[in-house]
Length: 384
Image 1 (cartoon, helix red, strand yellow):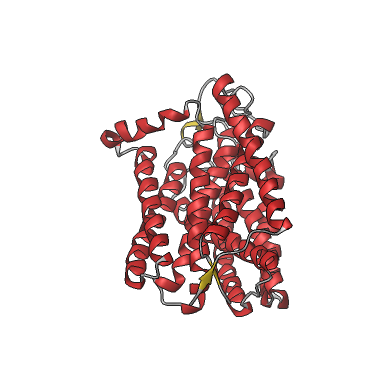
Image 2: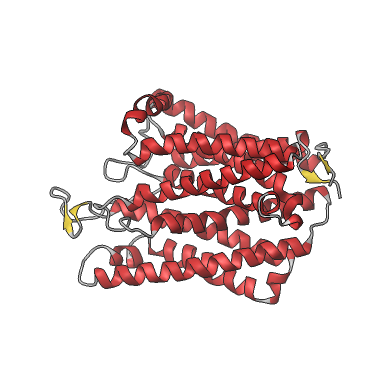
């Protein structure tokens, strides 16, 4: 199969470059400002230290994992019908992961101290945070090697590096879930289900972003999309969403039953200040409506699958938000069921600040520029 670059000389192409460039400039400005004045403009606090940048880190990291897994359908699992999208999926996986790591640096108070985790982390690998630094590095190297072998059409090497990349992707997703699942003092986090839930949600996010990117790219380049391939990805999403819906139901039934008499916990999660994000963003937009689309005749069309993918990506963002933010806002516990002294039993509240939003938009803009530049510089798309 032959691949080609895009011309990248149209007004629409340069318009998108300018749009993403503005977003990237906003992010760079906020990053430089934070280096000078600190994170005083951020909404994070000692009670809620992880804000929307951490939400985006988990979203982007997970989306990268999901993109990489879809990319391996053709070269590792022998599904030749998906080989035409393997290159663009692998490339997107790499640049989205770079965006996640850039967000990490932007959220750190002293970003250049990230090297310390490699220096001191070797002696403290029982820490999930220290372990993650090495897992992220290994995942990045494996993803880059897989992309290089795919671009070079080195079939056997692509299969080998693809298997290694799958293993690293699974470890990254699992370790991300363990960061939260191990925290016994956080009522809404402490769960053995989180590592597997992270993996499932990552697969949904990756496939959804790929479908949206392919749909937009095909429209701007006037290339036809293979409807059979796109609806196949839609069935893949349908399978995953059904499992996640069941998973969310079971987890919250257990949470409700276990904390029926409590004044926090499930009441705060399902009926508190963030409940609209859960019920509307995660459940309605992220599960119910996409399921309806994918199960109907609309799910057999390219734009029906793309619409469901957009809603699913919105749902994954909502799911990540409802996990991270309410989980911190609740009063921390010394042991399960016993709140730490000094917090007066009241939850803190978090709202996104303009500075945090600027940082996130900057990363999105940078990813957009890298994607457009990649389409023009690398043969990522099938010629026909």
